[in-house]
Amino acid sequence: MNPPTTSRLPRSERGSLLIVAMLLCAIIGVSLVSYYKLAATTLKGSTRSFLSMSNLDLAEIGVEQAMACFYDQSTGTASATAWTGWTLSGTTAKRTFSGYVPAPNCTGVVRVYVYYYTNSGGTPVIVAKATITPPDGPPLDKFIEVTLRNRGLWSTGLVGKTSVRMNSNARADSWMSDPDSDASTAAVAYSSGVRRDNGTVGTPNSANGSITMDSNAEIYGTANTGGGTVTTNSNVRIYGASSPSSPKVDTSRVHTDFNYTFPAITVPAPTTVNTISTSVTAPRTFPQSGDNINASDGKYYYSFGSGNNINMDSNKNLTIDGKVVWLLQSHLGVDAIHTSSNADTVFSGTTSTLEIYTNGNITLDSNNDINASGQPSRCLVYGTSATTQTFTLSSNVNWGAAIYAPNMTFRIDSNCSLFGSVVANTIQMDSNAAFHYDESLGNLGGGTGVSVSKWKELQSAADRATYASVLNF
Image (cartoon, rainbow, N blue to C red; front, side):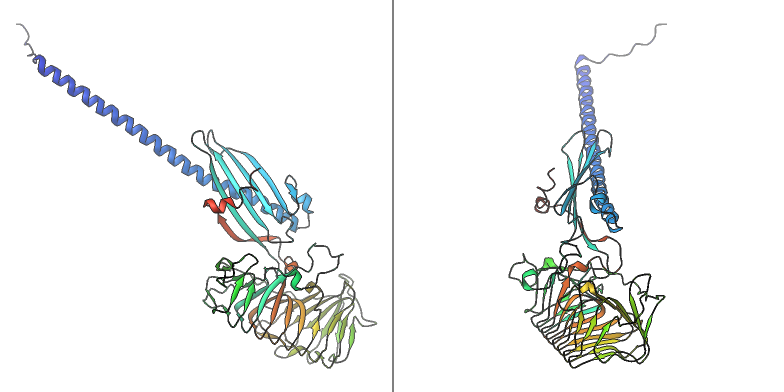
């Protein structure tokens, strides 16, 4: 029997079927091409996104390279050695780091530029530009700007743990007593001619109003809180050398990311101590004839027992003529030091220093001058009370000192001037009181190197343009 035969389609129907098949193939082909292009575009986009994130990592590597140099420098390594491999010019340093392969067929380069690499003369700033060149598409750039601050106790001018109040024409600014970082050259006394705009005032308190300014108070520098707003009225100024005259409060100089660690104070326990058995009320020179020196550090230590203090008035002066340390640790709730009526403390020569450790109060009034024209670093004051103590300056007192007393109530008023730095619990400035921060104190009083005060990725063209020329190497 013959097998059954399949009926054949008419020619017209067979043509239509072929056309349909060709259209389906075309649709499938177009879909495959579109899918391939979409997949390729997605892959390219995800690759560039990955490379962009890798670029940020590269920029941070550049910053860390510079931070490592700052650390080496802070441990005593000479600047030229700490910054080996960098191109140094004046106060700046620059270097290119290359050879990075963040992904197959990609190359990465980091250019780093550092301002004030010796950590003197100004605020250190690190700027890093990382560039990744992919196998296709334009290069990718990331810019990071990192502003640093010193870690010393007095790396900020005025620090109030809880609050800072500035009223009635109180003002703050800065200068540098040792601009060349060379102790063998003469110190520079504060004057309007050397005035600078780094009079930093800060509190880590995050509450609104933890810094309050009223009645023509001004900060020629920055106001910094731990998160809260700065309370001001219309007569207050916060500004810098390049700030516009209006508005009076330059918002770029008000920051809310301030932090500060308050380390414990270690009171020295030397082998050799001279005992003061009666209060000092008449002119005297320290060290006194016949006093004993502590051999291990070359300082003269004086321990004041309970009931014995320093109480000077009526033009009676004290003279510091060596490396002197006063220990007034049995004076909780009472005056450890009280001077008035033109009783000055004079520092002879250029190497005499005074350190004061006390849990008591300090009261200075009526035209006292204490190291007023000398370097504040020559007079260091540590308030050791674990509860509270008060330091008060009133009526034309001028004091050059670096003060660290984290539980202290500090008040300065009536035309008094403080040259140096103050760290306290609360700070009150009134009646034409002036504070002049000595930027040369930045590395003094413990701490190592620098820490980050501000980290910023530069995304806008305007921000990047600021550093375009210095990073073009």
